[in-house]
Amino acid sequence: MKRVVTIGGGGGQAALLRILRTLPDVQITAVVNVVDDGGSTGRLMKQLGVQSMGDVRNCLAAMADPKNFLAAILNQRFQDGELAGHAFGNILLAALEKKHDSFLEACRQAAELCGVGGRILPVAAKSPALVTTFDNGEVVTGQRLLVEKFWAGIDEKISSAPRLTSSVARLNLEPATPLLKEAETALKEADVIIIANGDLYSSVLPFFLLEGVATLWPRLTAKKILLPNATVTHGHVHGRNIKALIDFFRAHSATFDVDQVIIPSVMPPAVAAACANREYGILEDIVTPTISPEKIIRASLLDDTSIIAHDSSLVQRSPIRYNEDALRNVIQNYLYH
View 1 (cartoon, helix red, strand yellow):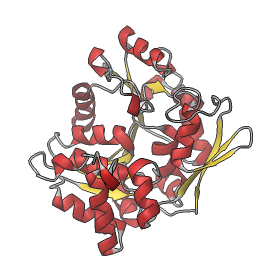
View 2 (view 1 turned 135 degrees about the vertical axis):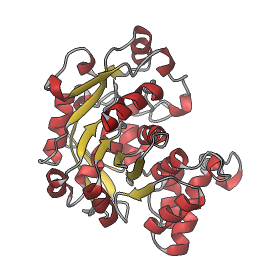
View 3 (view 1 turned 180 degrees about the vertical axis):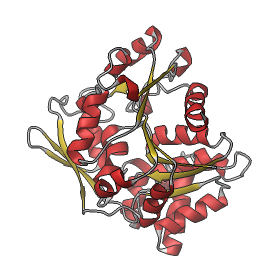
View 4 (view 1 turned 30 degrees about the vertical axis):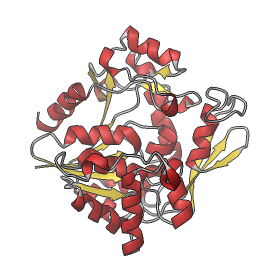
């Protein structure tokens, strides 16, 4: 039995979990980001004083038993009335947290209710605020405001402010927040740790800002795999290539390192065109590696089916996704060969 831990948040981690749950002899633990404060999640946090649950909900839906009656409606959103915009799964997690006064227990019980095949752990017991400092000295507090900053001047529905011209210099969590003990134990016991693809600043890096992670990371015996985005969001200069990405991680957590990096072997022209049309850049390493080739696992992760139909309500999401069958083959080969 291979013990696999995923780190991240958002759609990238959920897609990875959908793949892992189909593999034989794999014990899965999802260690999930808790800095999302936008949309339904942000409203419930403000109104009820609960923790950030949106990324946990996505992981629940990905890992739940497909035949479970709750699994089918976790991501269903109300369309009318005071609940308009809220996802059912968010309300479920908020109710369980209020009942037990524990977000960890809420995650555990929601997983049991949904027939989850594995464990879902928040990275922390309480949700800190993500604080971003730009190189011009500007400070932005909160994940939602950070997203708005990057899409200013590109989509007026998100922000009508001028287009971003500065770059992120540093991120912090306020208040300083320790890694959840249960998550630490899962990482220590893991055979393989996969850092899921997702938004660099708001989904992936926050884990490495937690107290205790910099000390823990080099002591872990698990093989560590990085699955980066194939696309680069406007303003995400640290995601333009793998070297820049790793350097940025190390600037925040000096002990950061990985054993392998999985990237697409090619960028099909139609996929590249879809990215350009929506103002996304392309990961440079797909063409020219910026780290040791021995660390890179290349695979045909992108094809014409990778292009996601444009949805103006989800403009801030990447226009492409990895082919799940291809990624499943890569991960399965790594785990068992």
